[in-house]
Amino acid sequence: MLIKGYDVGPLVPGEALLLHSGFWSNYLLAMCSIGGCAERPDPEWFGEDGADADALSEVLFDPAHWPVFRVPADDAPGAVVIYRNLDGDYGTDYLLTHPGRSHAVQIASWDGDFSGTGLTWHELIRTADSPLPPAEGVQDAATRFLLLLPLLTDPDVPETASARLIAALIAIGTPPDTASPAAEHLLAHLTRRSGHDPAWASPLSGSSEVDQNR
View 1: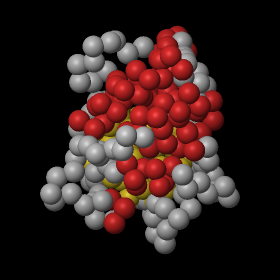
View 2 (view 1 turned 45 degrees about the vertical axis):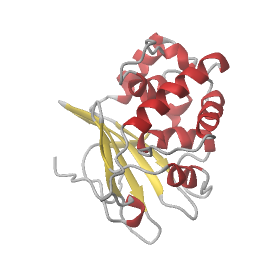
View 3 (view 1 turned 90 degrees about the horizontal axis):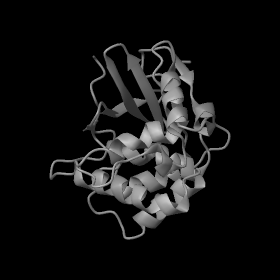
């Protein structure tokens, strides 16, 4: 699998893994674990089993296969999420694709913490709600929203943000009684780490890139 603009790693389509129990625990649980949460995060928050989460982590973090999750968009920039499984340099890279451009641009990474330039709530929702059915990748709105969620660096999310996140978590199998605390911890961490300072410019304008020369 080739992605123009990202020339490292044995990339493989990862969308089929979204249907496996344990995926969302691996993808979202780390964010719940940061920032002094009073309640210890658990895979059961997402309706998943710890053994399934451990088993799927071996697939997600396989150095021989780097899963790629594509979020194509119509009338908005698309996104690509890549599990960067370099030995000693494991992490997740986030790329944006722009209409009219032949290559993707890396804007952020997750290496135990977030680095790079994220998205505002409005930008995240715009991409999540603009599926492009002819293209390969994730078309379900809730799944798209959750895949993009780690890119949120907006301290001023609307009052409806929590309800939107809870609904998305329930849509992917999170029990209703744990969806609310999971959403609370996720939003608390994401809004605390805001990267929006006076010099900030949206990556959707093409003004920000993360150096890929590792």
